[in-house]
Length: 314
Image (tube, rainbow, N blue to C red; front, top):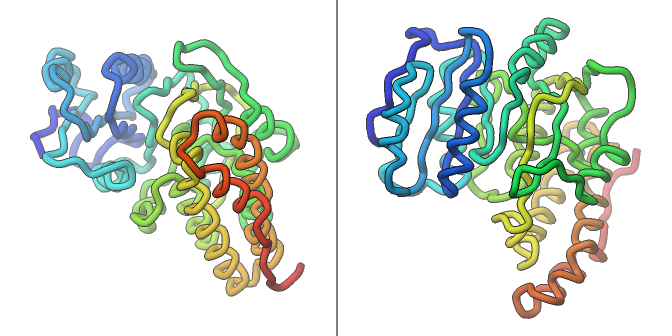
């Protein structure tokens, strides 16, 4: 690893460590960094962990000359999950934000999170309100996002605190969280880390681990984060090839067994059925037929219409 650019925060670390695993578009990453620098307060620090080799990036960070920012470049490529775990290792604050290098914090992000934690000081996770933007930064609303909001996300006055099997059932029916926007309690996140055998669904796997350990989530509807959804991404490419759904099917079935052993039979049933993942596969069939790898439609059909399996009923 290259030496990080020093930052403030002291040996105990800041309250909020914002970690940015970076690989890819330089301009989008620079916009993301600037959005962090617009946050108020003196209780945060930004650390960018570069998993690529783009020219000029170290020099750009050096020119920032901002002691709230640390930058380091991995000596070898760690991959998505490996770099996520590297970021978690580097976090020294009480809370960690693992934001995407093409996403944007709105200026009120930390104010929103602080207010949520004042409301529920023991919360493990905070999910703020999120706007979705496209590759050009324009507000966007895809079928996926509309379904998250209208069908899967919990209803009720905000802030809303959720935990236990109720939350597990909700997320396994359809994962309505926006992972890069979440603020996590660092100690809990570090205890479980991201699974190295998962490349796309590792965020949901971490949340399930935390819920089984007694974690709670605060949801607020104050929009303070912009999540960038590209037409082409690693997850969408894997989806068209079927790789994403092979991983998802394995995860949901393994998780159903864990939840049954834990006594959460309703959550196990939701995991065994994985309806939202099946519906997602169906929505991708036309695109896979047009431009996906040869034979990819067979994998999507198998995922969408495969057997649910047997297990205890609630």
